[in-house]
Each structure stands twice: as structure tokens, then as C-alpha cells.
Length: 244
Image (cartoon, rainbow, N blue to C red; front, top):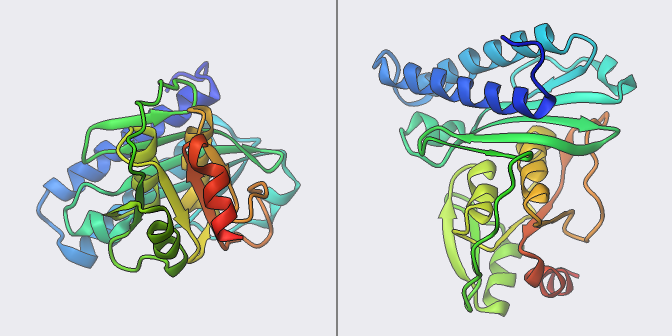
């Protein structure tokens, strides 16, 4: 691998390559269901962690599938990855799953890439595109299996169309891709669920914050993140008012 890659190029390259590996594992026919999810997680995690340690040995690393190392807390630069965001969807051979590779600098989701291998797409923080025009009726993405009560309440109050979808990355990228307008999650996540999507969404001019409007902070000792809001700017104030 070219060591001259920028951080953003590295993130995108690794997310895309991990996505290809995952598609190969799925296409092999050797695993199905939960076993497929486990095999995919292990394969992608091994690749991503090995590559990041080789390419950025001085940086910290946090992965959903790797034992946490508290040494990262003393580092300014920490890579935060989710090898398979939406393991259930991946195991069910759906398309609404993702690979997240992000770099948090001083606690801020600064650089990110989200691969949607089932769609053959990689969204990057260093290559923002113009958002399509928003429709008159807002569209809100929610979990296809356990939609948050707060999101359902807000959707009802603003008359939003609900779009059920799998992984957090798939939901966030639906807004970047112009397929949705609001992603409100209050059911709890972890840093790897949102770091890369937040970096990509922010680079595309979307609002990103906690549900109370406060800033999202990464590389924390406790990696749990209670809530998240990613939405088009024109809906930010209204949604925050309704949550409050």
C-alpha cells in the first residue's frame, strides 16, 4: 500500500477494500445467517486493524471487534472503525449495511469514509457533493427493527415520511445521497457506529450533533453515545425544538 496516501485517501481505500472482502466472503457460500455475520466481522476487522497499524503506527485505534486499548486516550489522532455496521443486514444478504473508517482528531470526527458495498458506493469526507433539493415532505430514516419512540414522535409532529433501514451508516448516507432528510437516533450507539458517518455528513454540509444540539465527542473512555442527530440544515431548528 502506498504510504504517501493522505488520511482521507487511506480511509476511503480501506473502507472500499474491506467492503470487497466482505462481498467475497458472502459470495463464497460457505456461511449463512449469523455465521456469515461473524465471519464477515472477523475478516474485515483483521484487515482494517492490520492495515491501520501498518500505515499509521503512531495513531490510536478503536474498533468494535477489537479489545479496547486505553492507550488511545492519550493520543490526539485515533482511528475509529466498524468493520461491518449492520451485521444482521449483512448476514441476511441485504444492501443496507456499511463499512466505517474514520479518524478522530482531538475528539472530533474529522475524516471519514463509509462504504456501502451492496450498492458499490463509497462516501468520503474529502469529496463532498452538492445535496439534492429537499422535497416538501421531509423523510426520516428509522430502524427497520426497533425505531426509536422519540423519532416516531418527531416524525408524526412534522408529518415526515418514515423510511425503515438497517445500519446507522446506511441511514446517515441516505441523507448524504439525497434519499432522506433526517436521522434521529435516541436508542444508544457506540462511537464506531457514528464517527465515520458524522465526518462524511458534516463534510457534505449536514447538521451533526447530539439530540440536544451539543457537539459529538469521540475517543472517550466510555464509548457509549446515547443519541445522535444528522439532518439537512433546513430541518435542524425544528427538530431540535421538538426534541427539547
